[in-house]
Image (cartoon, rainbow, N blue to C red; front, top):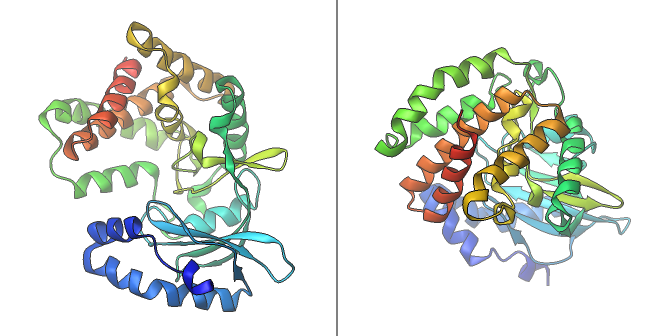
Length: 303
């Protein structure tokens, strides 16, 4: 049965090879042996088949005392390289507790949360309150002085690096992105920096007993306002349609600003800039739905 649970889902394998080419195929070929090694080293038993994410697989496992945990093995890239260090820093406060980690293997052993109950299941008013409470725990100050891999690596640096890998932004967004960038860089560099989750939204918050915890961070550092955009993208279909769409987006952002104590000008500026970059990315990969969402957020947050 264990060997059956080690089978890599075909869609995940195809996506990985398309993205990483030969290196991705070689990693997939090694993955079953790697997982078996982790099971031995950490005294774990697989409890079921893997669930696929974008760049990793997660298995439910049992520890020697019978308690459930989650084994996550990810392709190592810029977004995942500091996940273990961030989880250690949070130590279960606001995010899933890290039990074991192998940075070389891209593997994490995490406490088991209720994967069937995310923050999408509660009314938006309550969800914003929970999100604000978690961000207050996750946004550890002065994270840029840590000893993690690339401790000076910020959310803005990550955005600019990803942008450098892509073709020149399309004509639709090029001028607006370039015009905004000096103001964004100035605001980003001058504001206090904290540890950022990097992908904080309602689907990435799961029930933990009577409380909630975040999962799947893509850690970096920067102003806390940088973490707000995904909370506008996620649950987008709950905004009112038609002429009330843009006011609805602004209302949610205002609620997030009030709940988190964010700096309003930075919150609007970062949301606008990041939404424009999302729209450009969506245009380049021909994802009309994502482009529509990103454009609406960019329009709603324009000064």
